[in-house]
Image 1 (spheres, rainbow, N blue to C red):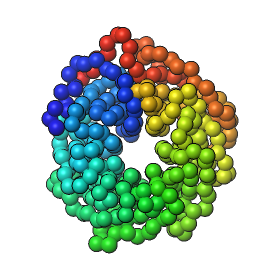
Image 2: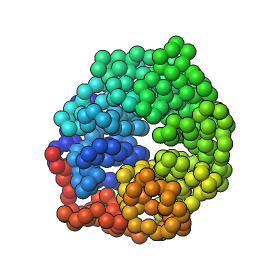
Image 3: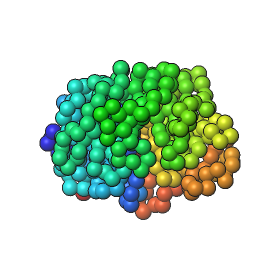
Image 4: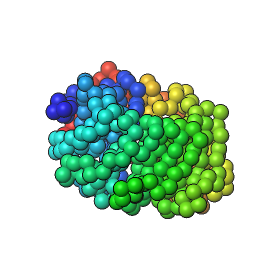
Length: 351
């Protein structure tokens, strides 16, 4: 594992493989974590300059996420059945959490940043004390592979898990029988999210997007798409972004029970992430598109998203033309499209 941080030396940047996931660090001078099968790149969100790279030949990365509040800590998991906690600033490995009996597909930090939960193919939810480097809770939560784990907003003990058994389970880590509520999605669940107001949850799986009332334990709004749904992200207090197996991002607002095509691309979308005033989209050809949402291409209802300044809504799909290469130095963040890709010129990491 110590071989990972050799990548912080000056090396050529090369995005030639599929983008598995894009992670955003919510703090001042944020970083982006761009995850590929055997590499993870750390990029400055402000100027798109590369800050480091993790490279692993014996592992296949599946997931990663930042600890938001305390320190610049990044949790990465994969096929090697363990979770590694990395200090990106000091460029060293802090902890290696071992205990799963299968690949780890999802991790999540608690609100205070002291606890980590994880789940994967062994169908077991585990809770870890980061300071002790020890598993403090383990429970066989599902009957099939766990694909997403997530802490409840502003909580250190309540979390949720989703699985290919079609169930989303809310669990309390303080008791021996932790399952509090069960939501039946009806088909394998790819992902779910809690809304910040703690009253609503949204899930995707199969061809369905469903909104759930947390208190009533019922689905109050659902959408059936012609293709399977892959990724999900909270957009505002009552709206989410999602993508089907294809080339289009869609916005769904459950306050007016409508969906709006947001962006359309020529390549298939593998992953995306909302980052302050932008959407980052990863493709199978190793390219990442950064689309600024500052300018308004179409108006749906500006008052709905007044608490999220910088975001705009689109009434029609926007055909994107590739912008090959990086922006010029000292240029301001504009509404153009930027692709991170391999070119003849060499680009190097900066410490």
